[in-house]
Length: 221
Ligand SMILES: C[S@@+](CC[C@H](N)C(=O)[O-])C[C@H]1O[C@@H](n2cnc3c(N)ncnc32)[C@H](O)[C@@H]1O
Image (cartoon, rainbow, N blue to C red; front, side, top):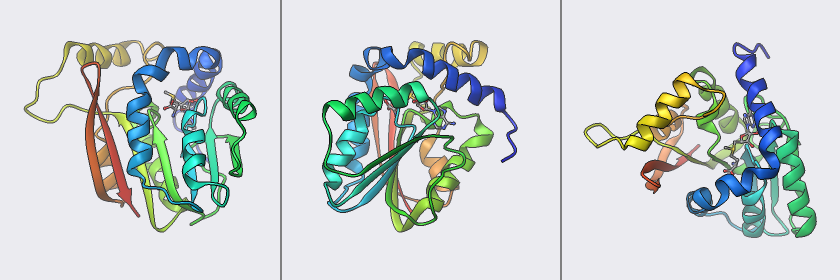
C-alpha cells in the first residue's frame, strides 16, 4: 500500500502505545454512553460476525461479543499493540464465549476477506485519520461487509450549519490544527462521509459530550 501520510499513522501508533494503560481513565466515562449508543444502533443478532475498527482498550469488544453470543464472531483491528495488550488483559479477566480475533494493523487495509462480516463498528477513531484517508477506511469497511451488512460510526461531529459552536469545540479544532501531536482528532461530518462511501444512511442520532456534538450513524451496505 502506498502511504501518503506515514507520519500521522506512525505518530498515532506511538501516541496510543504510550497512553494505553491510562486510556480508560482519560476517556471511558465521557465516551461510554456514545459508544454504547453506536453498538445498540447496530441491532446485532446472535450468530452474527462483527468487526471493530480501532478497538482501543476493548470495551466494546466485550459488548459486541455479548450481543452476537457464542455462535457469533468478533474481529478487530487496531494500530497500537499497547491498546491490544490492554484489551487482551480485559478479555483474559472476563473471557467471552464468543470467538474473538483481535489484530494489530491499519484500518486502511483490513486483513479480512471480502463480505465476511454482518456488521462493522468504529468509535472515536475515524476522526483521527487525515481527510484523504477516511474514504479508504470506509471503503475497507464496505469491502468486508456482506451485502445488506451495517456499519456504525460514532464520532465527534461538526456543528450543523446555523447552530452555535461551543467554545470547547472551537478550542478543540484550533488545538488540532496547531498542535496535532497533542489533540489528534477533530469533528467530522460522519453522515456525509458514510454516504459518500456508498452506504445508505439508515439511522443517525446526535449526542453531546460536555458541549461537543457526537454523531452515531448507521450505514447500510
Ligand atoms: C480515540 S481511540 C478510540 C478507541 C475505542 N474505539 C474507543 O472508543 O474507546 C482511537 C483508536 O484508534 C486506533 N487507531 C489509530 N489509527 C489507526 C489506524 N490507522 N488503524 C487502526 N487503528 C487505529 C488507536 O490506536 C486507538 O486505539
